[in-house]
Amino acid sequence: MTSEHVVGHNGMWAPQGEDPRVAGKPVGELATIREYLTHYRLTLELKCGGLSPEQLAARSVPPSTMSLLGLVRHMARVEHIWFEQCLQGRRDAVPPYWSDGHKDLDFDGAAGDAAVAADAFATWKERTAAADRWLDGATDLGATVLTRHGEETTVRDVLIHMVEEYARHCGHADLLRECIDGRTGQ
Image 1: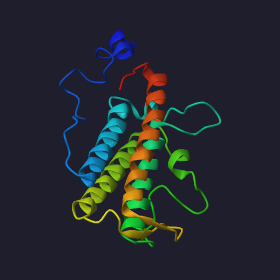
Image 2: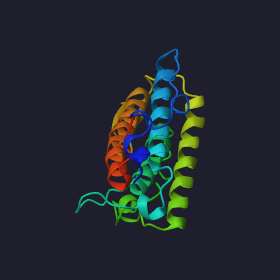
Image 3: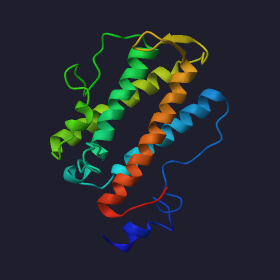
């Protein structure tokens, strides 16, 4: 572990001026929600950057199966469930890294293999791009939609839930990354 990994860039994840998570001044509720969502997606990606497949698959404290790679697979599944099944009503679309017989496949299948890691990141990027395309046409945050369990909610609630989901898991990613190479930071 180098001192740069432990200390970072004056406590920052990236050198000043090079952090891709630049905060703008969004105008309106949807723009604000999208900026937060983009920020947390980028944060998860940064926390995984520069690691080998084995490091990405390193698990936290037993008996947990949580790993950075598992988080990426989990968020691909979460993006699919909320944006495709709920917001678009595509209930027949099967989420990635899920089966009725193995509900923790996203974490349990996160093996330290280059092909598994490449698939996870490609799937996650596909799901986030599909979600962003849907968001490009979103106009009514108060519109009512049904969750995959048939409960009524609003588009706004789903989007806020997505921000919360990423924020929570980015906290997990902070701890996982620190355990791997000592790197900390925002």
